[in-house]
Image (cartoon, rainbow, N blue to C red; front, side, top):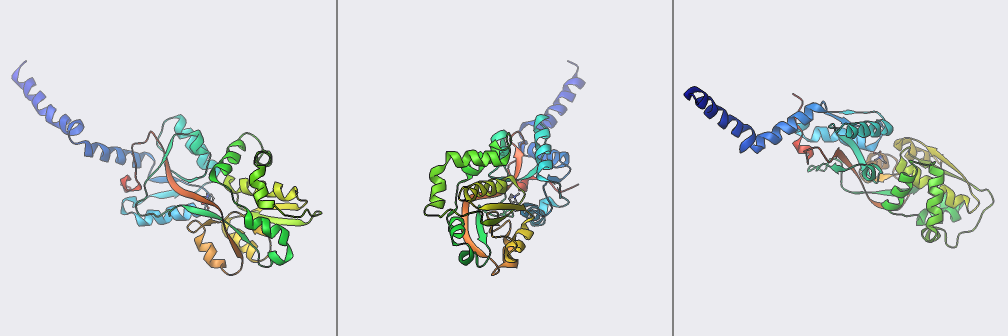
Length: 298
Ligand code: PBE
């Protein structure tokens, strides 16, 4: 082999060795660079009025490496469609997600570390009622006060509701969980068409809880209305006696600001579920583990 070719080989070796050999750090740096650029420095988000959208905007301010990043505010349906499509094509995508949710049953996903805890720790979902409900509707008030179930219960209803209407999925859950339901209704009286107005938020998580509760109350003779509104309107409606109760508040982080805004104008009956959380979610095939690995917009 002529000297020159040999010399070229010599010169090439170290560079490739540099590129692919020992310097693995660079490789992941490139990976993260490419990945950040590939998603155009954008988190695929949901509704503008949601708690997680606000929290993700705060997170962008909390992390210097997220300089120039944005949240694409669309809808929950839009986010899930984008996630499904990206996974179909094994493309990179970074979405604002939460648990419980059926996407974790449908896809191999991971939640990125959030060392600055911008999205908050684990949360609870609380029950709030209008002031005076205990006096006006003691029977229903008692059921609201006892209502509590687990993430697995809610996920079961959500997953089934991807195939059948939420009302049917909720009815199936109530039929299969009489023991848990009786913990909420033991000693309750039946009524004759007494109205009860539930204020909910438009996410499948809350559609599950509101539909289950509506069936439980209807089985006792109540006429139940469910109204879906934005989180801040949910607090306003209960505070202004526009509704009797809500099973929808994610606290203390997602809706903390609204809770403070209306504090003292509603009654907080405590958690009906624990261990829920928001997170920055990516398909497991993406080589990234933390929000801190993302790169600022070039
Ligand atoms: N969520 C589901 C809502 C609350 C329930 C997390 C999308 C939110 O972020 O406001």
